Image (cartoon, rainbow, N blue to C red; front, side):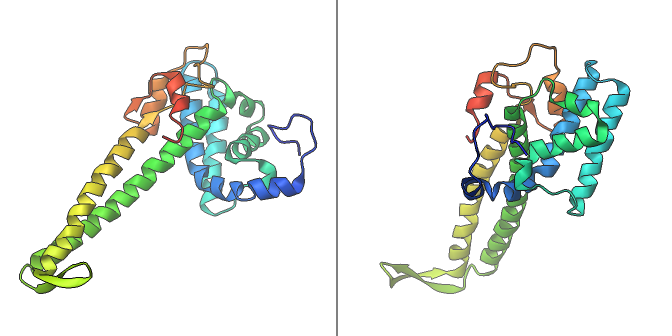
Amino acid sequence: MTKLWQKGYHLNEQVERFEAAQNSVLDARLIRHDVWGSLAHTAMLAKIGVLTESEHKALKDALCSILQLEATHEFTITLADEDVHTRVENYLVAVAGAAGKKIHMARSRNDQVLVDLRLYAKEQLHSVAAKLCHLCTTLLSLASRHTNTPMPGYTHMQRAMLSSVGLWAASFGEALLDDEQLLSAAYVLNDQSPLGSAAGYGVPIPIDRQYCADLLGFSRVQNNVIYVQNSRGK
């Protein structure tokens, strides 16, 4: 099957396997996030009149069926699918017909990549932060119970000062509190919706970027469409 990015030249299959064999494995982690982004985008297209009510329902039903299939590991991505975006779009066209082809209106791959990665990053940051807080609480609890439990303090690999288990445990707890601030900063950067930037210069139709941001749980819209693209990987 011809890839979306192929320009007529012969594709060396060995090079493709070497370069892209793991892409489908990694993209599989983004299936839910890609579907969520598409659900928000289709709702917005229906809101501004690009999609009819019946088209919106057909797309929404198809997207929800992907979530059900993904939950039971029945919705998979292969090397032939290229990536999660193509896999989802091809499924929508197969299930919803012509309506599936309209989902790309007012949206580029740049939009999709960014919204998928930010939704994934927010989810993972929230999970890591919760585990970090639990570990920090455990360490500080340990420290409070062992304030007077003696422990040697080392310098240059030698015992140097009398210390305590409490001081040792609390040092890691305080370090984790600093790490939590870094996670919070990363969350804030990811908590802005890129949808509507398209290929970096916006789109010539009156889309509702804030509506998409609200549906996806982003706290704000990333306003400058050029910077949206430049912020990839930041």
